Image: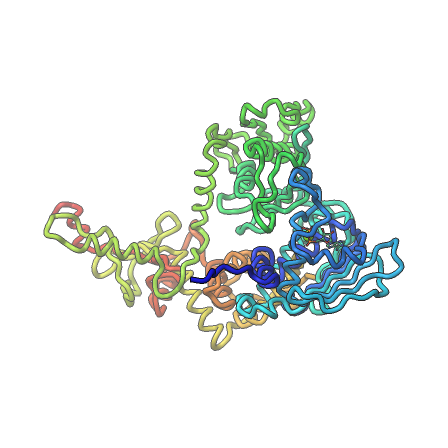
Length: 639
Ligand SMILES: Nc1ncnc2c1ncn2[C@@H]1O[C@H](COP(=O)(O)OP(=O)(O)OP(=O)(O)O)[C@@H](O)[C@H]1O
Ligand SMILES: [Mg+2]
């Protein structure tokens, strides 16, 4: 039989390899911005059209390329940044793999214009599908402009995988923000379809954070800074009151490179422990600088994951430094650093807190709050085992998120509901043995199980206890309300809109550019659901009215929470934007446990619940009530 193995043509090999680097327009944005930074640019402009699907262009004033380099830059494994493998461990540039431009040229049409300061003329190159179409001298400004057009024009299957413009634009903004935050001394701008979204003047890191994340953070950032021989850490964390319900503004940069690290994230979270609610996330923008020899950055094609030579030291250092920073700002006076003995010798950690700072902290009211048990902000000494078992803790942290709606589908029942039913079925499947009947009878689609005039009472400000003909039921006030609101909003979204109640004192809302873009996008749907929101200058809005259920004074928080909640859902493809919005609103407006209810309110809630098309579960699949039947209760008493 003939031999069957063949070498793939270059352009196909490139297309395949490109899949790792360029997954969506935002990947190209990251690569092109990083190239501009590596070229020493002080001004970088990003222009996108059609969410980057039609155009991603980056114009920089960096060092430019010679005619030959300009051509070479599109070859795979062509880089000016490393020469041998050792260089990888001294790397100070963002790029080093020499494959970004080759990948982009394999899956899009690219136009490059570049000129070095020392050259008279620049070079123009047009390349598509890895083939050079044009190369000629051109008059150009110093620096480089690269335009990537019609991404995936030659790989339709990939193009079809791209998400909605809103989703792709979000990814682009995320990448842009990461680069912009890590280089505050470079001017960056972003224009989307002719509209300027960001215009970030050079400045300090703090100025950049405020420019990017929103002016509301101006007075709410705590500086973090420690220097040791091993590593430096600097940046800002948000004061505890800026913690949000979703992981959003959390950034780690190692040697200026944005990285994702659940491990280091846990270090920061544990420094904030007891200062913020368990299911909320503090803001942070932290930079760790250390000898590149202590890192391996080549573990992932997008370079967003790295390996530390000694991860534990970095963990302990981050945790201690953040605690230290919070302490210095009198946010917490507890200074018990619980550190791995290996790093006790590190300078910064041994640095004594000056007496005055300590005294000042002790005499403050805050200290009293923090240092007495039973006070809202009391800080427990750090658990000694924490470092070793960070993983368990992290998982625990994750599971605490149950207060947020789960993301299961709405195809009738969620897994949770399914397993509950399974359990019941198993227990029900009487095999003649004298086991007790199920602890709670679940009665799907029950209608009006509770009499209108029944005497109801509230338990632990969380449940409503209601007698039924067959026993009694426990109604979960929050989940029940969530179901009621969900059905009300769903009806309003498709039919008659909910009337907005005009506010006497309209509230203005200042958002980050990314949130503003999101709110803009949701405006029509929100209008239908009873919110009157109007644009009011750059990234600002006026809330003119809200649905009657939102109490005055809470409008701003309601919208902020709503955006957070929406982002929480936004990675979930199963749901339409409207469904996500409705779920977010229902969750967010539902009365929370801890809210006392009058008899009238309990009756109203119970009646409304049983008017629902599906009163028994929330949209996410949690049961809204559990019924306990008489015969089961009798058996419990062994009768
Ligand atoms: N904006 C730019 N200005 C000047 N030179 C550039 C620019 N963009 C790319 N280059 C040159 O082209 C080369 C190839 O770029 P490319 O992004 O493909 O690889 P890289 O940055 O070296 O590594 P990586 O694939 O990790 O990004 C770079 O090494 C650099 O010399
Ligand atoms: Mg590069």
